[in-house]
Length: 150
Image (tube, rainbow, N blue to C red; front, side, top):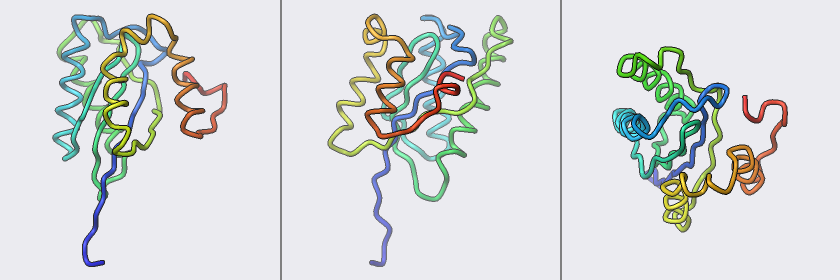
């Protein structure tokens, strides 16, 4: 086959360090927009970004010539720097180390997008820990309980 054909979509989840609720209602939309801008700048497509005060979900389409780990390192580093500059009261802000990443088939994109965009409603009933464990188990990802919430 002379060409390369792909459709790589990922559901990414990561938290603030120590799950500190830094991202309040006033700041969160700006942070989400900035995260989307970083992804676009890296030549990806942010399909949905959502979350609550202590964590973020991103649905994105990514390319094949760059590792997802490189994108995530850049997303976290650049957004942390921007948060510190834009919100001086968040001088101690940090993202957790690591992230969870799940592949998303085209048939599930709308479902995952809706899930991400309804995070506030979702977390009225379910903790982040329970959500993360369900995502890990549902996607066949093994994990060590000691490092689950870093």
